[in-house]
Image (tube, rainbow, N blue to C red; front, top):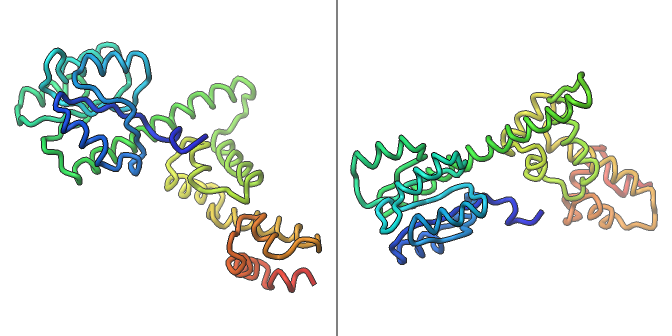
Length: 256
């Protein structure tokens, strides 16, 4: 899976080309976990695209010719399309806000959109998408496992999945990648792992790296810095420091 596969898809819709281009090119969407996959000048073009390709979020102007943002939100709502809609408008009108609520619109941002407001709104949407993805994973995973084994324990399965990931990928394992495997937010997985195992994810990763390093040090053909690299330390000093902290002696002393 490459970096782009991990981003949620975003469509930006605005009949003002300048506004649309600025939103797409000048705001750091990828830092918030989103990627602009399509731009449209009216709601109909956006709807046509969404009907062809699943889209996670739409940032949409309200007043547009041909097919307005309200029209787009209504069509998505009536067709039960799970795309989240955020309205963008230069008008502070109650009727629009009322319609936004009626059609399940997530938020209403006034033009010109402020940087901090965009960050706040889309950070919250990213959190919601993470949670939805996690629960979708749980539903599928639980159904599959229950069909195979009535004694299935979901909590055990999550920890087992994370630990197996570390066992197999300790040289490059990260909390973020482990979290993606079980469709959890990294911060929540960190909390969950400690709650269920009594130890930190980082400590578990270090433990597995150190145990494998000890095995590799028995091969005298390998230089100490090479062993460090093989278990995930690009810096030899950091490897020696971690090894000594774990075993109470340096790799060189251990090898002797």
